[in-house]
Length: 522
Image 1 (cartoon, one colour):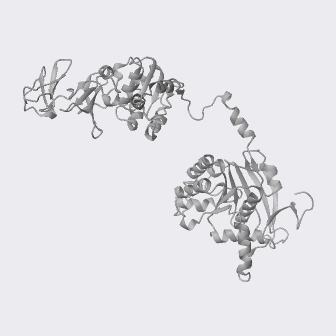
Image 2: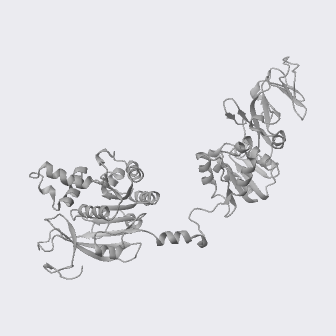
Image 3: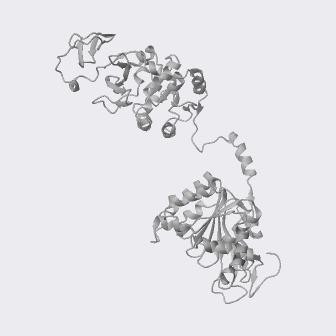
């Protein structure tokens, strides 16, 4: 009840409360049962003394009965307008330690001076600590809203300091919260609230947590917009949280069908297809060889085959060569001969004709790595752009070790490889792309840098050739060996490829025997 103050003469600044004490908000003086001298400094008054009175929070449509249950006070100015709210804080023993104040005009909060760190959740002192349900909200007004929606019959609490403190506060009270059969998380439907939900949902016993999927921002919005029935429906529809990765076998049928219907596209060589059964999205394939064996040429063969056998775009991150050299390699395929040997003699018009054949569908997308900036996050961002903006379903990274210099420099200390490979595994699943990575080797069939490269990959292919072979029939023949095959399991020598110096192409050939290529099947 508001009324006059005998000390300062205000006509309505003095507020009288149910327990008999009064407080004047004009001269900041308690009177009546708690009367104190006029010159008592404000900062030494007990912070258990509320400035306001228990009343409805009209602008949030919170009823007086709800505020009364939770001990929430409302602060008025002389014109009778609400200027703030006061929410009681209690220590671990349930003793009132002060009021958290919300200033309506600025939306600032002021915690009780000297409040201990182990204070209760807001509203915890009004709950039984056991029963069927306990609902946890992100803020006090939302706590009041949920309680009011259910006629103040359900136990509802709120964290004291918003979404950012939710995990820490709930950890403090986990034993108390576990006393309920169901813990219903009802944090705000925004980025911060979703992050808080994600952080807290693994805290509790299995099958105990439910998460409310709200269509509006927070519980109070349902109250202010008259959508209480909608909230009640969404609250009862809250799904029991199951940790990510935990799936009942009865829920796997759609995954089985998706696996059955996984689409594969062919490699350009029959023997490799027989082993790996083609290329698939959401897989990482490592193609590894020593320097100078022809890894980049093999990549061009794979790129060309994707272009000719599908309608997909191909993203090409060729870190060892310029975009001009990469494009010239594709133009050589169109010409049927290695154009880099003719640059001094070929005319611009003829060159332009081959270039036009390569770009006619504009399905190759390249990274000009000179503008990359030597940053792995940027590289991953470029892959995302290739998929989301340029429609690339397949990405070629040539080569891994050069990309890793962005993490480890040129020292040979490849400590970032495992982390990078994990990031790339997540990336191919996120983007639903196929990723083919060229890797250097260190010794026979050893991937340079870390065993983590092979572990993360779905397939590992080694290209082997004796660069110093004197036999002309053998020096241009590459053996293709499948060392890992997660999809089909079949490993070993897949095929043999012969490089033609006349056409600049790698084509499948029979197994070489002695000083000649054998006749017969590949």
